[in-house]
Length: 298
Figure 1 (cartoon, rainbow, N blue to C red):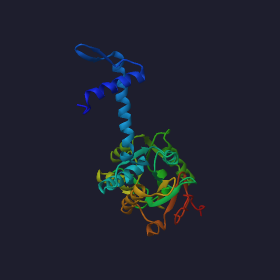
Figure 2: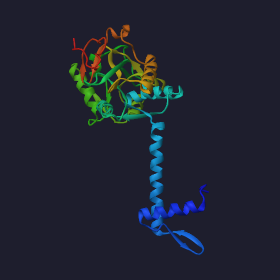
Figure 3: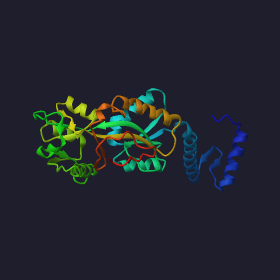
């Protein structure tokens, strides 16, 4: 079974027993059997050999690690993963996190090669813009709203929101209040899928974008654009230059963004307003600088 001559095997066993100072086998006239301590040695040895095999396979099985906030994982990153893998790019591990800060932390400490998030990014990271995402308003199917719907009229309608402990709720409320708008929140939930269901069932309106908005409209929700139209910039952050599989994955992201996000210079951005965190800046900027720091608000 071992393709080793019996005398050589006997010498190897004796040498092992001498090295570890244990009797691995008990010998009698009928042959040999493993001792109790020998069984422990075998179990430990198998564990060590399995770890050695895993170490040897690390290089061959390393996946490209990507971090993305939930919204952009659903909108862009997951489709880019499918495109990348189908094109023979290799393995990808997509880590979906709750906040942009978690994306930044993953990239900075090396747990992710690149991250997909809303810009701007903190100083010190490399940034590649993918384009601009328009935020629209979903409303119950029996509502009649003008399109575009003036942001100033938002207090007149029922709005849905995440629960008070959710950072998205805080950002939404602070953004609207900074623009002089007090939201009329009538129902709340932390389940985003349930949020869309509440819209369709008539509980109130909710902000959405991209593929999510298209799916909601297909399910019966109404949709209006806002005036001025809010836009946020979506991009990729990394700790250094991207090459090899990481550069190829960035191209997959750009391909997905081409059909989903609005590019810089598009006429639709001309009359829009740029939204970052809890601020409506006014005009949409031409771009962010290489470190992801936005130009000063106009």
